Length: 407
Image (cartoon, rainbow, N blue to C red; front, side, top):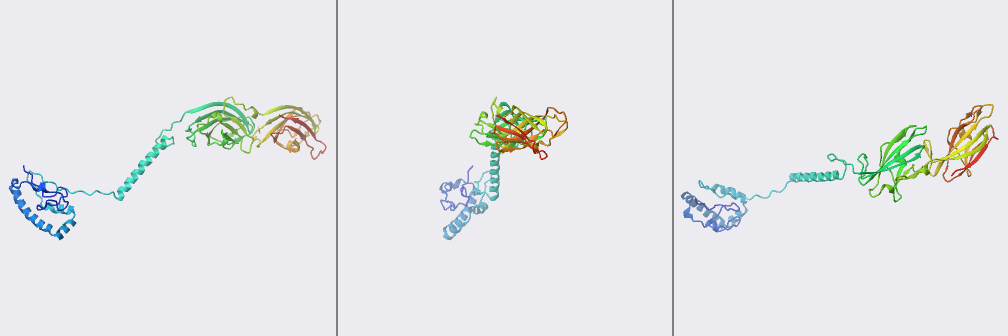
């Protein structure tokens, strides 16, 4: 089967002018395509070719005209190809050369750019979300795993506001999943227990009274406490208090500071078998004798400490609680009145009034060994004191006193 030479340029699809050796549109050399033997073509093809030859001569005449060539140059290639389809033919059983029309590269429109931008943003967001999840942030779709926790048992107890606070243990981890404010750079958790042996309801917040002393002497406040302490007489309450502390700082380098900034503070190192005895109340036995209001008074002992029930001493202050015993040898009831009116504790040239007292305001006939206490707040560095029972307005001459020393 003989293949007819193409009548259209295989590169641009424009009609081939047989008198030209190159394509008049794109300049493709055509010598090899036009040198095929015309005698081998079918009869029908020869007839068609003769007709096409006349057309070629007409096209050649037009092509020889400079003005016509200029006009042809301005005609788009695709338009010439569409026009040439009218002269195309296919011999039965043979396949004609396809009229290949080059496609212009399609440029992205505004809609495509917008879709591409949204796709890029989605991919970027997914990457950031996954990265944050692997860092340990609490995100949906990521299982939070509690990092390993180091625990040190401490079991040290100190009194605060008359309530016994025990530091059960200290824990350290990269983070705590149960802490909504947990840092991922390192956390320290203190498990504390408060036992109220006083007769009053005591309330405080560890966010106010607890801090950690760092190795560089800076103070760090809590990032989280599971509840405010509100403890009734005779009750126990456990608390969790967390601090943000870098992992490169060990527990033994830290010190818990208990006491608000305007209160007497206690410093408890976070280590096993820590000695906190200096913060325990200390009692000194005394035997001070006084005669006041016709009654026999004995100062039996004095207790020094940083707190009394429901109250912590002010900064650089302490409480001195005096225990007194009273005997009534009179034949009548002795009504002394409120100890807040007649009791004073002198140190130097200053006087302290009672902060709390349990001394009765009256003593029955024959009463022996009636006891009561009176608490005074004094500077921590003072050790010499004088208890004075001052004269009352109805008995200006009735005054008594006794002196004592405390460590």
